[in-house]
Image 1: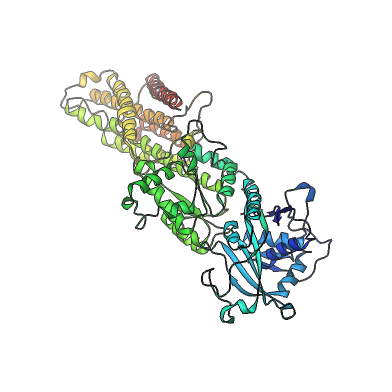
Image 2 (image 1 turned 30 degrees about the horizontal axis):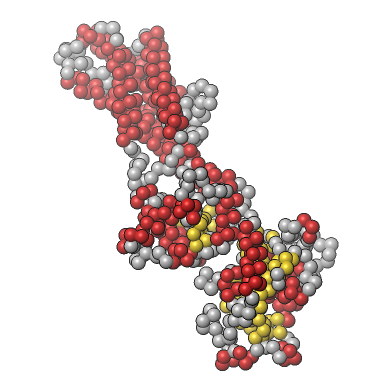
Length: 629
């Protein structure tokens, strides 16, 4: 969070700009911001007015812009929300030194810290002049407006409506709104003379008749580039859901700013779908599953509601920690038409741990994350930036994509390797011997396949729909069809054409033994033509499988950016030439020289046919995808 701005303060029906506290009501509100605050303020010495800036806080209203000097000696330590309120209110009261004086004068006698159930924080302070005033304590309350206002029982309905109107104005700007209230507390009102309690029900002092002090509007501006990252995630088929403890109107405004929610209802969208785009924790409370995420035991109407929520809701506001876990479970159960979504959950607090553990991928924040959240998560985001999650998705897709391409390439050569063994049973001379098969597999294919790890992404990688691991495995039927029935058939056909067009090879058909020097030379030359065609076919397959849909050659083509792959392809060709024309290699692998003109013809034909066919296939796929969109 980056809470560095406190916007207008509402007090007694008037809209005030936080500049300098010059009336009693504003002083009371700012004192609440200083005293009812969990942030620590440290200032070893009083700074001079000419000291160096470290932080600059300002309100958004240009006419009342006010700057604040915070030196390295003046520091606040706490949550970003508490720090923002403390710094702004301290400056309005005269500076950090005055804030320290107030904290010393109004010592804290009791506190009920903020929690997700109460949604407020209470502090009870004892003033140094308490005996003279007759008031033993001052109670200060700060928290969610709807909760704090419920304790302001003396408010008239007109005043309450006016406060809610200003509250909605602030929330409409995407501001997080907190309400402040105060109340004097006499010693006689404390039961048993001891301040105790964890909520309004068990407190040993009255929790009513509070006086409304004002509203704090705090801006939590998204980091630069988050809106673009949300758009990229949506283009990649990833639904971004906001789960927050903020008020629904604040959450709605922020979600629209980030593009999580549309600026207006979509044309033709049903009213029910629009209505459930933003839901509250109270909606979830009424539809909790009976067991731990056991939605199958829920009544049919509850299951229907959750299906609609998973399909349409993009913002869950005013939620508790248990709500987060239930929401994650709902997406895992009802998503993908009952198959279940793959859910990644981000969080930083202790209360986020159950949801982080429940999610398929728990992502904890590093900079502001608690140790509990980090231990519960699968991934710790070092820079706390949502853009890094999208980049991680892209890198994960690239890794999967390259692994699939490597598998596709490796399997392409298997059909032309195995067919010669079966053809030999039909009386055709062996077209590829065992050592040549090993040379293709171990000497060339395995190393080329490894280089796919360095393959850059295709331009449309993040426009593809996500791969669901329960539906689409790493090796799919399309992978096998491509390798065996498409690329394998092309290679096999070209190899046999090269083998059967070798001069004199037809004279060897049906011979039980090939033992004369002339026949052996023709047989080896035919095998060399088959081997070389397969080698060139694998080079063409390597070039073709670098992309699935993007063209390799021509305008907007992918090209050959993987220099590691290119180097191995060159090495493959040089090894193949050595096998054909270097005598020691000829003896080892049973090859013979192929005339250079014939070798050039085989090379050109194999490259043009395989690469050309695959470029045509990719063009048809792109055309089909464009028509589908």
